[in-house]
Length: 232
Image (tube, rainbow, N blue to C red; front, side, top):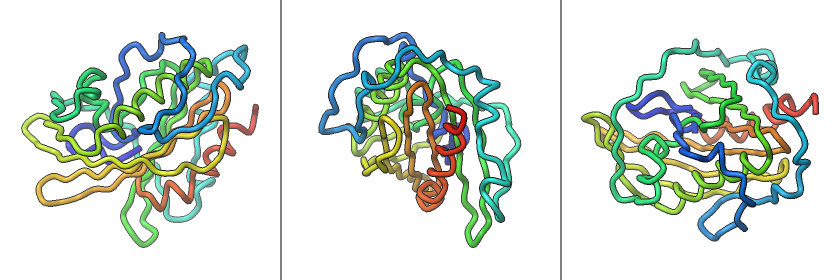
């Protein structure tokens, strides 16, 4: 994802550096979709026996400049900088951890990420993240964070000494893969707003998260999913 508003650098990544305590160890059956969630699908329908892919294997499935076309440049990876984060006005996110409130990276050990800038008419960013685990773990972990975020339409994040007002809105996700999640986040700080779209698609033991400028996410999601699942 990535507009990491004064916290790390956008990346729901994904929107900014997700912390999902205990999600990677949750093997219970996923709950039915609730009214507050923006996801659809049934992890039980996926093949549970697929072995998770390694981070190295996921890296080869990420988009690159040749896949995206003119105007895109990959950003060098930089060490994450994590300020103290406090959430105000959303108890569900407080329980998950402060960084979850900004939509950061999911806490699955097998992962690969890439962030691109786009200068084709506007200076924008888009981030792609790939994760692999059992279908149930991916579904439960991703559903938990999306449900928590969209369940609090407005809240505030204190990142270091910076106060950031956050507005979330669930959005319809394209009917791709086995399960879909999508949301819009608006970050307001210092009189400026940043709008980030974050869409996640789970297909079997793969989870794809694309975050950034809404237009770029809509434009490039299909390309990312096609490459990520081409070897399945």
